[in-house]
Length: 271
View 1 (cartoon, rainbow, N blue to C red):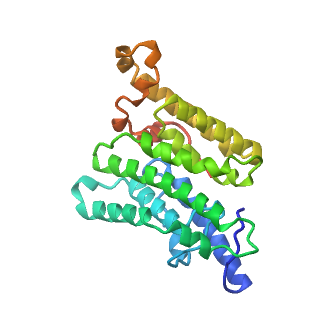
View 2: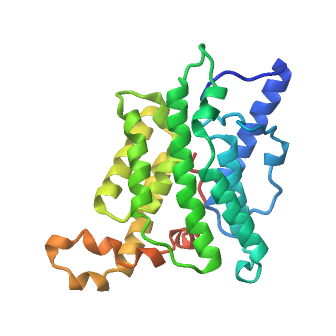
């Protein structure tokens, strides 16, 4: 569990809020990649006390970012007919813009003290990783629900990978918090280089935490990548062997990895 301090209120109140954060985190990230219609229970996020710079979840994700993921996950898993409901589209687009403008640095400062085990700078970097990965997820879900076409996600993935730079420190425990963002980076990867980075990062997470979800994430990504490569195999014929990396990016804007994930057997909890 990530410990950042700066929690206010009574000990009982703190413990209750901590339990609610745990439940909300498990429910939200657990349902974010589930098949539509499988999970229909009400969100526990409504029970979590929120503020302008709401508290941090055990994996370093701001509650506001968690809330945005829940909005998109909820709409997706209920499989609403968004093409005929402009109001829902507006709600999703507004939630995405609010998440993008969220002040991560102020949130980090608000949730750390001099005694915190994680500095405000590192907490801000963790928050940024969650913000960027949630953005990739939200954009893909929105494109799926509206039937629109995304521009290449490669730039988003590159930005997310770059945000991990601070955590290249040897034996850094913070890497254990980042299974879900790393999986999102992998699912949206368009190059062999990005895939290699994702597998290396998942291996680092495994070595620090020995969480079975890490191994499951790598296996699921392998299946997704195999499906994508098979789908785009015919396109690769216009390239020679030296440009093998290039065909991975062909047609990726119409590659719906969220729906493809739903077609795989099983369910996962990548946290």
